[in-house]
Image (cartoon, rainbow, N blue to C red; front, side):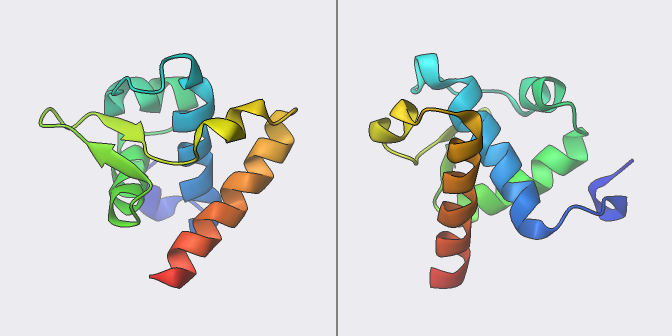
Length: 103
């Protein structure tokens, strides 16, 4: 199933990938992650990852290296002290909305 057939709203799609980039790899925040690994770990298609990661880069929330791997640019270290994944997800939703509507 490709992203085009997916019923996820835009913000949920972006924030779920953003959350995965930040939360799953927080132990090594400076590590770049391949799109293939991100797709496998997040259990989504590579097409979904490519579309969402492109939006994250456009919004300044992630950066890509010359190999096409990604790492999250935000949130800052303080976000990793949030007590639960749900509060982290809420933060991501707000951050994504702020980035989308401020650009």
